[in-house]
Image (spheres, rainbow, N blue to C red):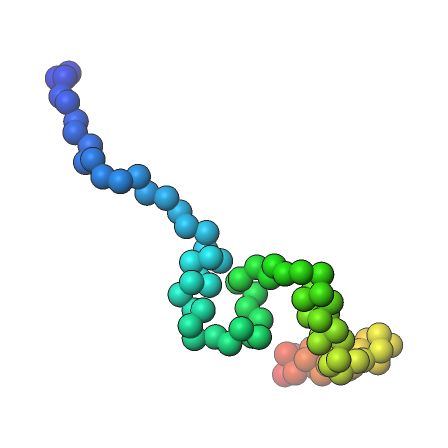
Length: 84
């Protein structure tokens, strides 16, 4: 066996950037500040969180019983169509 000295290239160490931060930096100019992005963490004050949840609650509300009936009807139709 020979004793060879292997030289590794000397370059700056590679680091992994946080994906959400990188994604946010690359798309910040193309998105509006009010748009929600699941890849970017939402940080804010208590008032901002409260406003965020209130905007969600302003949407359409479906009671659980109605949602379950709609799901069961969809599932029955979906399974019937799969067997055809």
